Image (cartoon, rainbow, N blue to C red; front, side, top):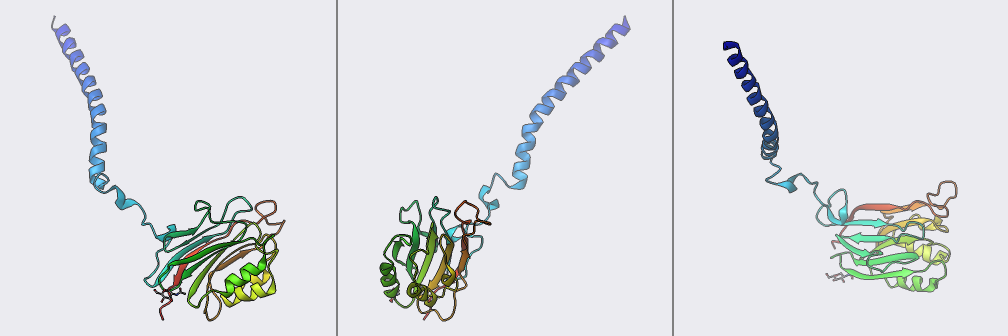
Length: 225
Ligand SMILES: *[C@@H]1O[C@H](CO)[C@@H](O)[C@H](O)[C@H]1NC(C)=O
């Protein structure tokens, strides 16, 4: 009968249509992904979309004749501080050259070369060693300082005055287990803008006996004369 033939063709048509539809969806997907990628250029330059990386991992770059720096104080008595200048980590736990008290790095302010790093135990160490160390700093030296755990127990007026001469404003009020980071220089006229200080206060402390760590990044001018 004619009707049967028509039904047969219609059935065949729908089967083919269904198959085509499935195959189409399946293959079109991978095709679309490929096309989209080449349109957006993602296959050509995957790095072009990443944000630029600045020295010391900072948020911003520095002009010429400036050193990029980042200083992070210790966190409680658990995580050590770190000091970076011009993309070089001068002091850190990984470098195994940090410790309880004051962590100090001396850098040539003209060329950024590391001169010395030293740890001074401010809880039970000999304060005279720090006094001698600060006394011997030559004109034109950049001084980078980060506290860890406690930086004040052994602090005295003489050493406070030495730090003030390097440009510190906060050292005079530095107390037991405060966090303090500072970048100054020998021969600086006036106060350094690069200083952070957070008081140890049971009411606001992040950790039981210690405040939150402090962190500072920026651009310190190179010594030009
Ligand atoms: C820094 O290095 C320069 C040479 O590049 C030198 O003349 C100067 O004395 C050094 N200054 C310090 C403080 O080390």
